[in-house]
Image (cartoon, rainbow, N blue to C red; front, side, top):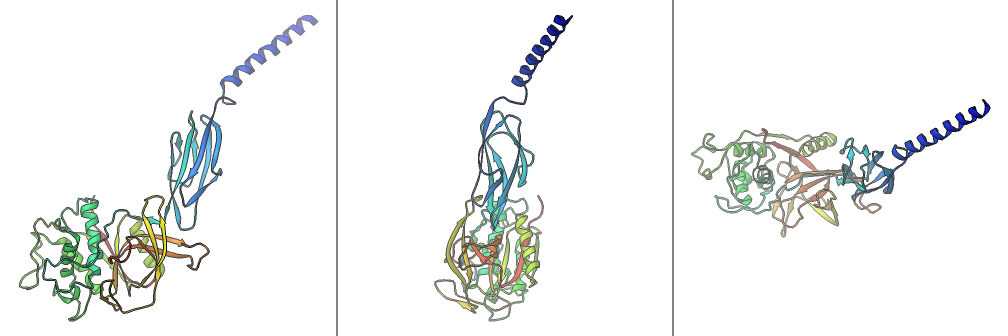
Length: 372
């Protein structure tokens, strides 16, 4: 009996060893390890785990956290294989595939709408335009119209600019806005007043956008009224404006439109940008953003910039295309941390993307073509 008991025990131990080895070789406790390389674009870091190379088995779930630098925002995760629970969340998990893989966290410098035109003064002289200065408002607005018509090919914008070159389309807008008091008699601009009155920008845009064979604007007998260009189609867009001077409210309104992919027109008391010779590339779009600060208050500009004269009711208009919040563009340098807007100015002497502190604004003009 004793010898039999020993035999049974030895048999049980041997069987356990065989089964144990079977589980260890074929189960999740071991097996082939694959390399996970974690990296990021400029503008932030992966902080969980730290960036580098790690070994995991297929099916392993890895916690990831992306942390942007000041002024930057997290965009998304990409991977050469494998899957994320949520690729657009800064904190997510990644499931390891049965191969080596690279995971990248992508960051962007603020928020920027790509491919918005940057039309510069002066306009052409296809109409009765004789004063070619102070055309900043029509130029700023034609960028928005061209964006929806010719860049986005929006269904509610087809041929709204009639295939005209932007500098000529801006001339038509100048009539409807009564720029330099040489256009529509329905506007508020006073005789002898240069530029475009802030109260005329929105209704002038609405009239021009709506203008087609059915909506016969402008109505004769205005001797300065232009003839509707061939192919011009009209639409009922949402054109609004807000001249509130509350910093947080206006920045919130501006940010909301940019977040929704809607470029807009912004007017300022004056325009005296000082180039700080800082150019930063947005790692997401590849666009170069140039940093400017505000120079002293002034009532006019002179060559080589367009000759413009300003007061509170006129000011200077630009096209708003983006923003960067709480950003210090020179680190420990003299420029303080601030909220910045990214605009397309209409002077050939400034670069395409001008980042300037959110100050000295007068009005915002939000334009939404609606529809699909």
